[in-house]
Amino acid sequence: MKNRLMVGIVFAALVGAPIALLAQDAPAGRPASSNVRGQEYPRILPDRRVIFRTRAPGAKTVAVRARGNDSGMGSDPYQMTAIGEGVWEVTIGPVRSGFHYYELIVDGHAVNDPASHTFFGWARPTSGLDVPDDTLDFYVEKDVPHGDVRIRTYLSTVTGQFRRAYVYTPPGYDRDATTRYPVLYLQHGAGENETAWTWQGRANVILDNLIAEGRARPMIVVMDHGYAVRAGASPAPAGQRAGGAGQPDAFQDVVLRDLIPTIDANYRTLTDRRHRAIAGLSMGAGQAVRIGFGNPDVFASVGAFSGGGAGGRGGGAFDRQTAYNGVMADVAAFNRNFDLFWSGYGDLETGYKSGRTLHATLEAAGIRSVWFETLGSHEWQVWRKSLRDFAPRLFGGPEGT
Image (cartoon, rainbow, N blue to C red; front, top):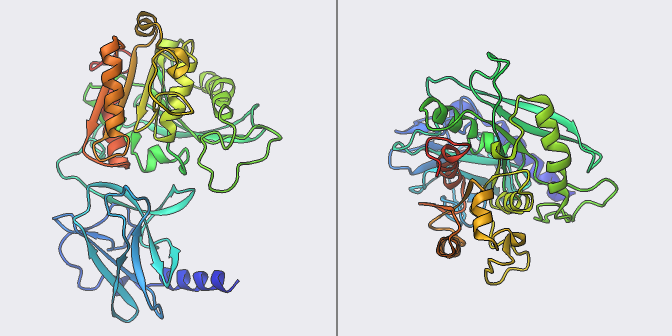
């Protein structure tokens, strides 16, 4: 109880920080786009160093710590220095461009930064820092036609619970009531939820820009919550990372029995398999591979961003005859049935080398697939770039193979 009270007092002090005090003597640079409106810190300098400043009166120690060992912010806590009147500050970096989860550590207690918006990651709302890359604008809003992100609530027959999906509809969707669209089912990673691809990944902005450039076919994108527990079953223990919350096929059944029928009934979709794709990142990549390759009558395109492995739950060496439920045993049949198998990694990721080796193995066997690699670790900038490369290849798009 004492520790809870301490965290509450610290957080109240942080929230109550006067904006004028925290913004005093603002140096060069600009506030992060992920900041709460009106907050000057975190502040990003031209060389991508980042200044964190916060108010924690009475605290003995304050630090900034990235969430995740692969973060472009680094893995060790950065100790802040008291600069007067309960204000603490530290400058870190340069920080790799992209989105990074982080938290403040005040006298040993982890709290969110009240100057930052929170994003659902690490199984809870978490502070986020978005560091721009001035050489890239594909995920930045532009003066182009914009689609909408809608919320679709539906009752799952599998879980017995109401669920929520975010649904991107492309520009012009409401102007023409006759046009039907292909659908991409796009999954988040472990500890995240259906909001992630919109808020952290900026999927809607990426699609808007690709469609405006004529690089991608207009499509509907469905982003659902990747955890599911069957009706009457007990939830998984707290912190368990399994995609099906202890029931590996529960989410697959949600997708096949509930989600796809809901989307097809409420949106103008093209309902044949050639116009349906599934992809995801990390945990979501494993789900996409398992669901997509396990149901070739439903999906014709599969994308695995930073994950997917060899398709065998037990791991081990890749065996084309048995991997992915044996879907690749017959090379000619696989190439005939699947329009696209896309996989990719950041070059600093743990799975990068094995992913590249797997692609080479498939290519040598005659399996038609696409490999993508880019600078980065297990982070959102890699997955934003992955979507930019993947989407134009779908549904007969201009960059398809």
